Length: 114
Length: 113
Image (cartoon, rainbow over all chains, first blue to last red):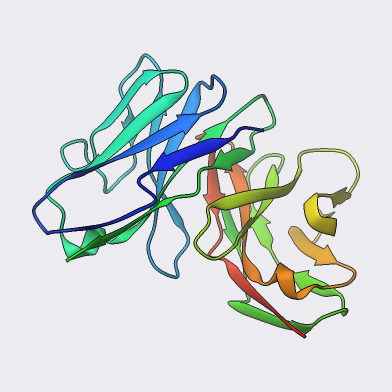
């Protein structure tokens, strides 16, 4: 397993601004993922962030809107750029450790855009 | 395409009674199946997984899940529900084409005292 922390835990932001969310893992992991969970909904994968390579984005998500950094094997950031109220969601990072395919999740960042 | 379905938006059960949260799947290869729980204002917590082996898988907090290949189901169960089990439960399947997890829509479990 892995222990994952996220900062900030929540934020209220003005439209048009940007927010950077940090994800810190207590061990080195190759695969990290960023998800969005809109209120009362399931999880939607935004991108996969592997260290040493560019993030791979899912359909409907673009780098200009959600730039991701992965500078080392324990840390990643997701930026939500030029925010609108539709970006109000919980943003979750997760990691996969070992060969069991299960993922472990951070506590999430609750973003409200006004 | 790989998919997972949770047919119930909400399940209500009295404390002390057995509970079942349903999940069915569709995959092209061998299924890798997972259950997660999300408590209010928290991230997802891994409960258990099935990759191979015994059809009855035991996990955290007294939960277990039964893999049924003929019915393509992976229902989550607990013999005796607790009020503290009230949460949102997600079933997930590994997409063997992309190696990513596909999550169901979630089932809200409400356990009444």
